[in-house]
Length: 381
Image (tube, rainbow, N blue to C red; front, side, top):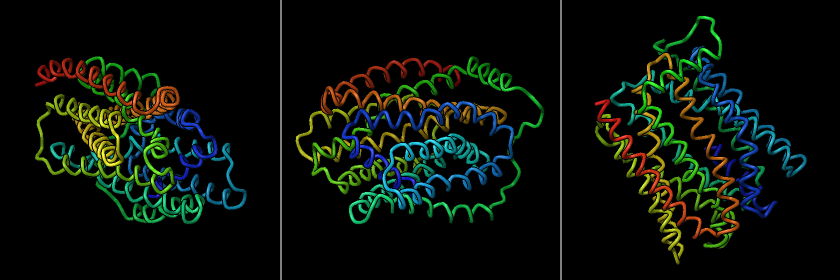
């Protein structure tokens, strides 16, 4: 929850101090791209190390950026460059943490329950998003954004202590032989060349993340245009997005184990996201806008666990760290570019025109993916 408390403060501070969605998108791009690039190579680290030991180390180091932000902002106030630097450090640590979490889940959960496990992991994530975003808005309004940084730093302590007591069975694969990075990446290339379905699943993640997942970068502007424009309203919109994501994760987690044919379900989640964008484009009141944001969040947490679990079923354990890193790279690498794209276009076109254009684009491209992946899934079946 602490990270969402902090993110609410970071995006709001940058937008208020720059007054531009485009500059907010540029800030996101600059602070995330180095970490995104590192994500591409993180899989080789994950496959070479004891995964739970590495997880403990990364989590322990992750407390340092928010703690440094809290101390600096308490003493000196807002500084855009220092904020960008420490957010960048946090993103680099997250570049290892995100795929590592997915791999750790797959080592302790049977394959038939993997989709449900990933959906419940997303449920806990987005429950934190709801509480964290709304709490972040209130703490900024009632106190100061500095409080958000302190809360995020303190939120790591219980997990660091808890992880010291976890000693899972040693069922994980770990590469011990000496080998080059080039060989590791070549093995990944050969796998994707042979497993076409895995390749198209990752490619679809990249496209949807660029066009769809990046859209919430315009929420500060939507808050000002459709609501009162206060930090509390921004926290409310962020929480509604998280609430929809929580409902989506819960609905997916409570379903019975599905077959490997997921292309239709993935396609339908993207059509649902397109519907949410159309509602924003046509909306004349705040309640319809809130419904659109709710549906948007719902589609997120149906899309990603379905693709994640399918990829892990298709991937041998020796390659799982690298494939999950590529999956994470497809998401994190395209979102900041998409945020920059959406940030600039919304200043030119406005939210309604941008929403309608993105909706049509996602409908068309997702339908092309559906037709292609349908034939590949039949081949796998």
